[in-house]
Length: 270
Image (tube, rainbow, N blue to C red):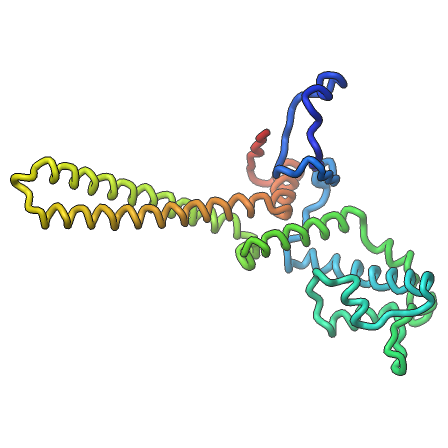
Protein backbone atom coordinates (compact mmCIF):
# COMPACT_ATOMS: atom_id res chain seq x y z
CA UNK A 1 0.00 0.00 0.00
CA UNK A 2 1.12 3.58 -0.53
CA UNK A 3 0.75 6.35 2.00
CA UNK A 4 1.43 9.84 0.73
CA UNK A 5 0.41 13.46 0.74
CA UNK A 6 -3.12 13.87 -0.50
CA UNK A 7 -3.36 16.36 -3.42
CA UNK A 8 -5.31 19.54 -2.81
CA UNK A 9 -8.85 20.04 -4.05
CA UNK A 10 -7.64 22.21 -6.96
CA UNK A 11 -5.04 19.64 -7.99
CA UNK A 12 -7.63 16.88 -8.04
CA UNK A 13 -9.97 18.73 -10.39
CA UNK A 14 -7.26 20.38 -12.51
CA UNK A 15 -5.54 17.08 -13.22
CA UNK A 16 -8.75 15.09 -13.46
CA UNK A 17 -7.72 12.76 -10.62
CA UNK A 18 -10.40 10.92 -8.61
CA UNK A 19 -11.35 12.76 -5.45
CA UNK A 20 -11.14 9.82 -3.03
CA UNK A 21 -8.85 10.34 -0.04
CA UNK A 22 -8.02 7.15 1.85
CA UNK A 23 -5.58 6.92 4.73
CA UNK A 24 -4.58 4.46 7.45
CA UNK A 25 -2.91 6.97 9.73
CA UNK A 26 -2.75 10.77 9.40
CA UNK A 27 0.71 12.09 8.50
CA UNK A 28 2.21 15.59 8.52
CA UNK A 29 1.90 17.40 5.18
CA UNK A 30 5.70 17.42 4.78
CA UNK A 31 6.03 13.63 5.11
CA UNK A 32 6.09 11.26 2.15
CA UNK A 33 6.08 7.47 2.41
CA UNK A 34 6.30 4.85 -0.30
CA UNK A 35 5.73 1.13 -0.20
CA UNK A 36 4.10 -1.75 -2.01
CA UNK A 37 1.05 -0.85 -4.11
CA UNK A 38 -0.55 -3.74 -2.30
CA UNK A 39 0.90 -6.20 0.22
CA UNK A 40 2.83 -8.78 -1.80
CA UNK A 41 4.35 -10.49 1.23
CA UNK A 42 3.35 -10.67 4.86
CA UNK A 43 5.25 -8.35 7.16
CA UNK A 44 7.19 -10.29 9.78
CA UNK A 45 5.70 -10.20 13.26
CA UNK A 46 8.34 -9.56 15.96
CA UNK A 47 10.28 -12.59 17.23
CA UNK A 48 8.77 -14.98 14.68
CA UNK A 49 10.49 -17.59 12.51
CA UNK A 50 10.00 -15.46 9.40
CA UNK A 51 11.78 -12.49 10.93
CA UNK A 52 14.68 -14.61 12.19
CA UNK A 53 15.04 -16.39 8.83
CA UNK A 54 15.26 -13.08 6.98
CA UNK A 55 17.42 -11.32 9.56
CA UNK A 56 20.33 -13.79 9.37
CA UNK A 57 21.42 -13.09 5.74
CA UNK A 58 20.35 -9.43 5.97
CA UNK A 59 22.53 -8.74 9.01
CA UNK A 60 25.48 -10.56 7.42
CA UNK A 61 25.15 -8.46 4.27
CA UNK A 62 24.92 -5.19 6.20
CA UNK A 63 28.10 -6.01 8.09
CA UNK A 64 30.01 -6.93 4.94
CA UNK A 65 28.76 -3.86 3.05
CA UNK A 66 29.71 -1.42 5.82
CA UNK A 67 33.14 -2.99 6.26
CA UNK A 68 33.80 -2.88 2.50
CA UNK A 69 32.64 0.75 2.29
CA UNK A 70 34.85 1.81 5.21
CA UNK A 71 37.88 0.03 3.76
CA UNK A 72 37.31 1.67 0.36
CA UNK A 73 36.78 5.22 1.66
CA UNK A 74 38.92 5.32 4.79
CA UNK A 75 41.41 2.53 4.21
CA UNK A 76 40.72 0.78 7.52
CA UNK A 77 38.46 -1.82 9.10
CA UNK A 78 36.09 -1.49 12.06
CA UNK A 79 36.08 -2.47 15.71
CA UNK A 80 33.29 -4.60 17.14
CA UNK A 81 31.68 -1.68 18.98
CA UNK A 82 31.81 0.47 15.81
CA UNK A 83 29.93 -2.19 13.84
CA UNK A 84 27.34 -2.53 16.57
CA UNK A 85 26.82 1.23 16.99
CA UNK A 86 26.76 2.01 13.27
CA UNK A 87 24.42 -0.73 12.12
CA UNK A 88 22.41 -2.02 15.05
CA UNK A 89 21.80 0.89 17.40
CA UNK A 90 18.05 0.24 17.24
CA UNK A 91 18.19 -3.55 16.87
CA UNK A 92 18.71 -5.96 19.73
CA UNK A 93 21.38 -8.50 18.73
CA UNK A 94 23.26 -10.41 21.39
CA UNK A 95 27.03 -9.85 21.28
CA UNK A 96 27.83 -13.53 20.67
CA UNK A 97 25.30 -13.75 17.84
CA UNK A 98 26.67 -10.58 16.24
CA UNK A 99 30.24 -11.82 16.58
CA UNK A 100 29.30 -15.03 14.74
CA UNK A 101 27.82 -12.99 11.88
CA UNK A 102 30.96 -10.87 11.65
CA UNK A 103 33.18 -13.97 11.52
CA UNK A 104 31.36 -15.14 8.39
CA UNK A 105 32.50 -12.11 6.38
CA UNK A 106 35.53 -10.65 8.17
CA UNK A 107 38.89 -11.53 9.67
CA UNK A 108 40.00 -10.36 13.10
CA UNK A 109 43.36 -8.85 14.00
CA UNK A 110 44.08 -9.53 17.68
CA UNK A 111 46.74 -6.82 17.87
CA UNK A 112 44.59 -3.94 16.56
CA UNK A 113 41.19 -5.49 17.46
CA UNK A 114 40.04 -4.54 13.94
CA UNK A 115 37.76 -6.55 11.64
CA UNK A 116 38.47 -6.44 7.89
CA UNK A 117 36.53 -7.99 5.00
CA UNK A 118 37.65 -11.42 3.81
CA UNK A 119 38.84 -11.94 0.25
CA UNK A 120 36.32 -13.52 -2.10
CA UNK A 121 36.66 -17.29 -1.94
CA UNK A 122 38.47 -17.27 1.41
CA UNK A 123 36.57 -19.56 3.80
CA UNK A 124 33.64 -19.69 1.33
CA UNK A 125 33.07 -15.92 1.44
CA UNK A 126 31.06 -15.15 -1.75
CA UNK A 127 31.54 -11.38 -1.75
CA UNK A 128 29.31 -8.46 -0.81
CA UNK A 129 27.24 -8.46 -4.01
CA UNK A 130 26.50 -12.18 -3.72
CA UNK A 131 25.35 -11.72 -0.13
CA UNK A 132 22.96 -8.97 -1.25
CA UNK A 133 21.24 -11.38 -3.64
CA UNK A 134 20.22 -13.72 -0.82
CA UNK A 135 17.13 -11.70 0.09
CA UNK A 136 14.50 -9.74 -1.85
CA UNK A 137 13.56 -6.03 -1.81
CA UNK A 138 10.11 -7.05 -0.54
CA UNK A 139 11.80 -8.78 2.39
CA UNK A 140 13.74 -5.62 3.24
CA UNK A 141 10.54 -3.54 3.11
CA UNK A 142 8.75 -6.06 5.33
CA UNK A 143 11.60 -6.17 7.85
CA UNK A 144 12.01 -2.39 8.11
CA UNK A 145 8.25 -1.92 8.38
CA UNK A 146 8.10 -4.48 11.17
CA UNK A 147 10.95 -2.83 13.09
CA UNK A 148 9.36 0.64 12.78
CA UNK A 149 5.98 -0.64 13.99
CA UNK A 150 7.61 -2.56 16.83
CA UNK A 151 9.44 0.60 17.92
CA UNK A 152 6.20 2.60 17.82
CA UNK A 153 4.33 0.06 19.97
CA UNK A 154 7.17 -0.08 22.50
CA UNK A 155 7.29 3.73 22.68
CA UNK A 156 3.59 3.68 23.58
CA UNK A 157 4.21 1.15 26.35
CA UNK A 158 3.05 -2.01 24.56
CA UNK A 159 5.92 -4.45 25.09
CA UNK A 160 4.15 -7.84 25.08
CA UNK A 161 0.58 -7.42 23.79
CA UNK A 162 1.66 -7.54 20.13
CA UNK A 163 3.25 -10.98 20.55
CA UNK A 164 1.44 -14.10 19.40
CA UNK A 165 -1.05 -14.78 16.63
CA UNK A 166 -4.04 -14.30 18.94
CA UNK A 167 -3.09 -10.86 20.29
CA UNK A 168 -5.81 -8.99 18.36
CA UNK A 169 -8.63 -11.49 19.21
CA UNK A 170 -7.54 -11.48 22.87
CA UNK A 171 -7.75 -7.70 23.12
CA UNK A 172 -11.03 -7.84 21.21
CA UNK A 173 -12.44 -10.25 23.81
CA UNK A 174 -11.31 -7.86 26.56
CA UNK A 175 -13.11 -5.07 24.70
CA UNK A 176 -16.37 -7.06 24.78
CA UNK A 177 -16.00 -7.70 28.51
CA UNK A 178 -15.20 -4.05 29.28
CA UNK A 179 -18.10 -2.84 27.12
CA UNK A 180 -20.53 -4.97 29.13
CA UNK A 181 -18.92 -3.82 32.39
CA UNK A 182 -19.20 -0.13 31.39
CA UNK A 183 -22.85 -0.52 30.39
CA UNK A 184 -23.67 -2.31 33.65
CA UNK A 185 -21.86 0.33 35.74
CA UNK A 186 -23.64 3.12 33.89
CA UNK A 187 -27.01 1.48 34.54
CA UNK A 188 -26.27 1.03 38.26
CA UNK A 189 -25.11 4.65 38.49
CA UNK A 190 -28.24 5.88 36.75
CA UNK A 191 -30.55 3.89 39.03
CA UNK A 192 -28.80 5.14 42.15
CA UNK A 193 -28.97 8.77 40.91
CA UNK A 194 -32.71 8.36 40.44
CA UNK A 195 -33.01 6.97 43.97
CA UNK A 196 -31.20 10.05 45.32
CA UNK A 197 -33.55 12.36 43.43
CA UNK A 198 -36.58 10.42 44.63
CA UNK A 199 -35.38 10.47 48.26
CA UNK A 200 -34.77 14.22 48.13
CA UNK A 201 -38.27 14.73 46.73
CA UNK A 202 -39.70 12.90 49.75
CA UNK A 203 -37.84 14.80 52.47
CA UNK A 204 -40.65 14.38 54.94
CA UNK A 205 -40.56 10.58 54.85
CA UNK A 206 -36.82 10.09 54.18
CA UNK A 207 -34.22 10.50 56.91
CA UNK A 208 -31.21 12.75 56.20
CA UNK A 209 -28.86 9.87 57.00
CA UNK A 210 -30.57 7.74 54.38
CA UNK A 211 -30.25 10.51 51.76
CA UNK A 212 -26.57 10.88 52.65
CA UNK A 213 -26.10 7.12 52.26
CA UNK A 214 -27.73 7.21 48.82
CA UNK A 215 -25.49 10.11 47.75
CA UNK A 216 -22.37 8.26 48.90
CA UNK A 217 -23.44 5.18 46.94
CA UNK A 218 -24.18 7.28 43.84
CA UNK A 219 -20.75 8.96 44.08
CA UNK A 220 -19.00 5.62 44.47
CA UNK A 221 -20.86 4.10 41.52
CA UNK A 222 -20.00 7.11 39.35
CA UNK A 223 -16.31 6.70 40.26
CA UNK A 224 -16.44 3.02 39.32
CA UNK A 225 -18.15 3.89 36.02
CA UNK A 226 -15.50 6.50 35.15
CA UNK A 227 -12.67 4.05 35.92
CA UNK A 228 -14.22 1.36 33.74
CA UNK A 229 -14.84 3.84 30.94
CA UNK A 230 -11.19 4.89 31.06
CA UNK A 231 -10.07 1.24 30.87
CA UNK A 232 -12.43 0.72 27.94
CA UNK A 233 -10.96 3.71 26.08
CA UNK A 234 -7.42 2.44 26.69
CA UNK A 235 -8.39 -1.05 25.48
CA UNK A 236 -10.00 0.40 22.37
CA UNK A 237 -6.86 2.41 21.60
CA UNK A 238 -4.67 -0.68 22.01
CA UNK A 239 -7.07 -2.72 19.86
CA UNK A 240 -6.92 -0.19 17.04
CA UNK A 241 -3.12 0.04 17.19
CA UNK A 242 -2.79 -3.75 17.03
CA UNK A 243 -5.16 -3.86 14.08
CA UNK A 244 -3.03 -1.24 12.31
CA UNK A 245 0.18 -3.18 12.96
CA UNK A 246 1.63 -4.06 9.53
CA UNK A 247 1.96 -7.79 10.29
CA UNK A 248 -1.77 -7.93 11.07
CA UNK A 249 -2.86 -5.82 8.08
CA UNK A 250 -0.76 -7.68 5.51
CA UNK A 251 -1.63 -11.09 6.94
CA UNK A 252 -5.36 -10.36 6.85
CA UNK A 253 -5.19 -8.95 3.31
CA UNK A 254 -3.17 -11.81 1.84
CA UNK A 255 -5.09 -14.59 3.61
CA UNK A 256 -8.54 -13.23 2.73
CA UNK A 257 -8.13 -11.44 -0.58
CA UNK A 258 -5.35 -13.50 -2.19
CA UNK A 259 -5.56 -16.98 -0.67
CA UNK A 260 -9.33 -16.87 0.00
CA UNK A 261 -8.80 -18.18 3.54
CA UNK A 262 -11.47 -17.18 6.03
CA UNK A 263 -13.46 -13.96 5.86
CA UNK A 264 -12.59 -10.34 6.40
CA UNK A 265 -13.82 -6.80 5.94
CA UNK A 266 -11.86 -3.75 4.85
CA UNK A 267 -12.91 -0.41 6.33
CA UNK A 268 -12.11 2.75 4.37
CA UNK A 269 -12.09 6.14 6.03
CA UNK A 270 -11.09 9.49 4.67
